[in-house]
Length: 251
Image (cartoon, rainbow, N blue to C red; front, side):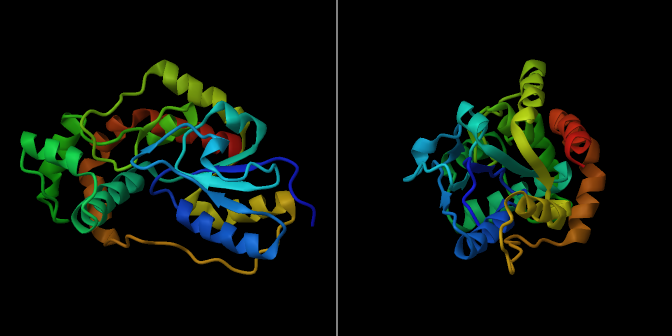
């Protein structure tokens, strides 16, 4: 199988299933004539640049937590999205329990939040008041799908001191940039996305492992989603609009 003639870029939006795709790519690398390269910048998602990688060979696959840039225009470009509410809660609890409490990261932002109010999560109904305060004070990332596709850098760890609010012109930029993507998948239909991706290059892939680092109680998440559905939808208004556009383009 010949190498792809263009670089392949995957923009990994946090908590959208990108680790599962990366696992598949690791296996594809071992079975095909392609190099799989990962890059990132600590703490936030910068604009994609080949300079973050050791090799810039056109036949390589480049992946990482990045947002859209001009470098993406010359590549076969991909990303994955997910249900907005599930993405919200996955970020909320993963970044609190695993990143903050276990890994002791994002301390500056968390300390700033604690100066405003007593910030604790325990996966109970008591979290509702805390979440509402986070939303009201713009202390968590919003519209990360739109920011990624529009090319707007944002912090990786979800909890922030002042969330950047998407404008209509930002949203229109994201819509315009959709034309540069070869495909955008939804983790809810991952097998379809992966099968189509493989078909573009005739890659061999015998198996891959689904990566689910944070396996929270789905019944609890469903209950919280019902109780906070509108507040989360309003906070991520442009992502909900964008998802509808993506479905029209790629499904």
